Length: 274
Image (cartoon, rainbow, N blue to C red; front, side):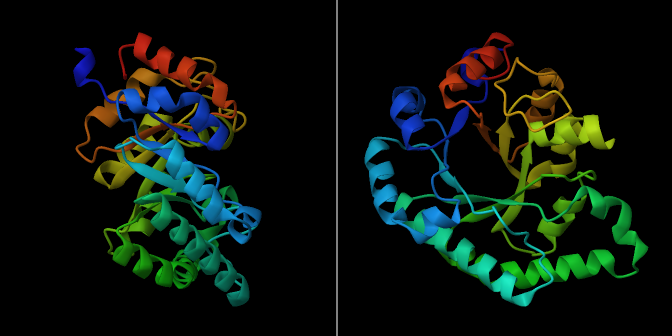
């Protein structure tokens, strides 16, 4: 396949990674996911100063920008209404950061757990109740995201059924709620929980797929290795991506940000991306 027809890779980076990989990001105006804005400490601290510094580092960048939203310490479907209020407030703070950064996408984590897969149907209303609790958390956030032009993409974490969170996203009936796939999380679920392989997650998401975390793993844990260090079969994954017209952002999300270009080079050598 000609190099120019291959999908262009982006990366998830903090400020230090932006400094290191700035030239690589700008050479093809790659998509970037900014990861300094997801912790409570960040959002309660000088996030605006970080955002302004980040914007300066991205001067000249015209690719798509997103952030990873907050996720530590909570789930979107908390039973406690006070906790749901805190979660909504944190997500609103993250939308404030999006506005300063010029970001139009935010990653949020799926509420589905491995336990849910086996137990939601124990209760006749289990799935409906989870969905309603998630709506109560996200209702004001989705309304704000719609007004701001930000898309919330729901990322698989422990999800064993790749269709469940796709249906959850669709239940909002909003262009501001779509789907993300994390390849390493899917591979963990496949290897350790009996879930389908990674390419099935891509196909299940279909045209709702707007974002992908590309990371390699061994099927046992959440490794965030560069592609080539684990056991994911990348050709079927990219074949599934290539069948879509939704143009998802292809974001290398690695534990070691110094290996971003090495991971990209592996996918380039396979003839899958650039």
